Length: 135
Image 1 (cartoon, rainbow, N blue to C red):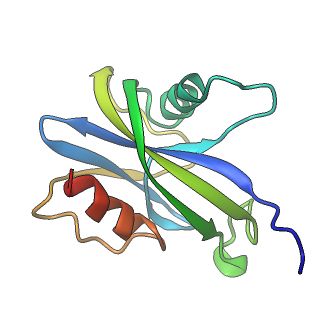
Image 2 (cartoon, rainbow, N blue to C red):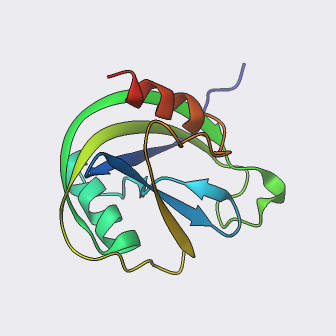
C-alpha cells in the first residue's frame, strides 16, 4: 500500500453577527477561507490568519480546531492543485476587523446562518458545517 502524501490545509469558520463567511472559487465552487500551511510556518494560528487576510482582507481571532477531513481536488477542476490530497483542519474563528476585499482566488462571498447554510459545498465541507452548528 502506498503511503498517503497530502497537504495540510486550514479552513476558517469565521463568525460575525451570528453568520459564517462562505467564499466562491470560480474553478471549485463554494469554499471556506483558508489554505495550506507554508514551509517554515510553525504557528498554525498565524498561518491561518495570513491566509484569511490574503483571501479576504479580514483580521480574525483563531479559536480552537473542531473538525478534520480529507479532500482531493478534482482533476477536472482546472484548479492549480488539481489531483492533490488535502487534510483539512476546521477552526472556529471570530471576525475582528476589516472590510472584505477578495483576492483573485475568489469572485463572490456570502454570509450564511444555521437556517440557510445548505449550499452545495465541496466534499467534507457540508459535514464540517453541520459539525460547526452542532456546537
